[in-house]
Structures are given as structure tokens and as C-alpha cells.
Image (spheres, rainbow, N blue to C red):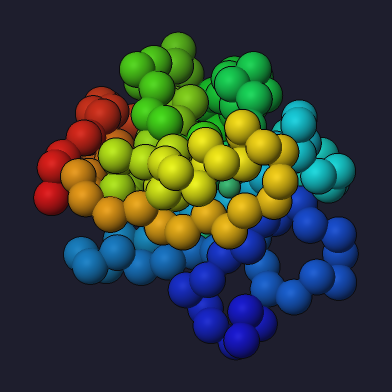
Length: 182
Ligand SMILES: [Fe+2]
């Protein structure tokens, strides 16, 4: 299915031969082409291809079709995400971090015009441990015994970032963090 469904991206830096794709150009509602890249980090995560070089190469490919390019960097370490931000500054419109589920307060426009935030946060229940039921996670931490983590309920919030991009240049004008109770 991941091979057929064009709306699904998987991390770009999976080994070659893995099903699906990690970068594509999508059409926004207003007809504007938006390039999107998803990649995984490697620090405290599984070993994959280099996210820096693979993302840069994919961004250069997408740039032939559109100036608007969004990178979702799915990574554990803030250092790796920040470093990628500096590496890609001016080459993509926005770098939005994911994976930790906790929104960071470091949204900014980098010097060459790329919007950046280390983690956009999570959409889901916040009276939880990154979305899972507190009791289950505590049992695991207190006993070290594997426990099924059920999805928590209540206090559902939508987190994200709103990025304003100049379509003529692909540079970001602004980035706004969003935390909204649903
Ligand atoms: Fe993740």
C-alpha cells in the first residue's frame, strides 16, 4: 500500500529498496506546488543513511519543480535537528522537527530564510506520557517489565506550526507555534 498511496511519505533515508518514497511534490488547495521531505535522525535511533546528505540531495531535486520545500525531520536529539537546520538554511523553506511529541519554544527564521523549530509537538491527549496512559508507562518504569501502552484520553490538544512562505522565493516570512485545546 505504501508503494501505491501517493499521499504517504516514509523516511527518505531508509535503505534503497524499501517500499514507498521519502520526498514528493504535492499540490496545495490553491494550486501551489509544495515539496515535502521526511527523514529520520540517527542519534539514539536506528542506523539509517545520512539524513543530512540524503535530504540535501532530495531538496535539490524538488527545487527543479517548486521553490516551496518543507522538511519533516523525525529525530530524537535536538542537536541533530538544529545542525540539520543550519545545514539546510536557505535551501528549503521550513524544517519542522517531530518525534519527541513535546513542542519546543525555539521557532525562528534562520539567516538565509528557512523557518525552523526543533519539535512541533504532538496532536493527542496531553494528560499522558507522550500520548500513552500514565499508569502503563509508570508500571514499565517502576518494574522494568514490558507493558502494553494504551492510548490515553482527555485534554486533547493540537500542536503544530504555521509557516508563511513567499511563493516567489521559497523563503519563510514567519513561523508561529500552535498549541490549541480541542
Ligand atoms: Fe517517532
